[in-house]
Length: 297
Image 1 (cartoon, rainbow, N blue to C red):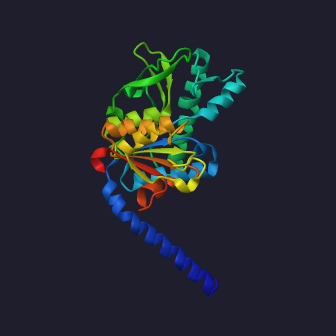
Image 2 (image 1 turned 180 degrees about the vertical axis):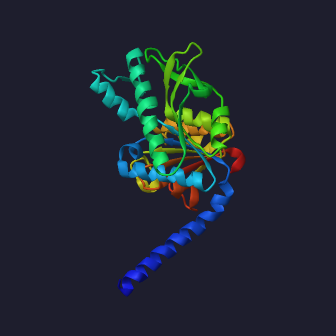
């Protein structure tokens, strides 16, 4: 080993120690607090990114936070519908979910995607437990209400008992967004919505949405116009002014709704950045947009 090599290793180690030291106040501040992470998008499809997200979740758990993961799985649903010769249909951005599609959605989300995330967390040294809305009556569904979209639901009720039991015993709950109504009919619910409602019901410290955008941009074509921090009132105004538009509207609305119900902060971050979760939670600058509830600004 040359002198340069050992110098490089020393610098590398010094950086690592500095980073850990910088994280300490955040670790102290958030120890024992609940963080709800909506996991989806590119971070779910790219295996190198997936590995980093999983490690970040285990890291959160190891330093005393209580992470709860809520996931979607759109691309995987499409590929299985394709294998089964069922044509995916969308209406107003929502998946039209007839009975046959609902069967596939449930099998893929609850059986396949959920258990894969659980297995990856366990492999990385965490203790994950897979759930959907039906488990322990975690959340129940009601029809979303639009004509002709089939079994697409909204959350009608959340019962956090099972999440509390698991999280307080060191388990990492991994929740898929399928639930039943009072008659037992299964519904597919948007995973952002489920994450927001669970965060609200738990009085979570943070709701974090991993997305394929860098956050809220003043000009969606220009990455340098990222808005790092807004309060709930400003966020509503950004929607009203059309600065938040398209697919960002439901995401920001979901954040606003959870903040209005007592979640302290909501974050929209770019899951395509390696270790986005740790960067957002444990560094001063963060990387996405943080939306604060009015009582915390």
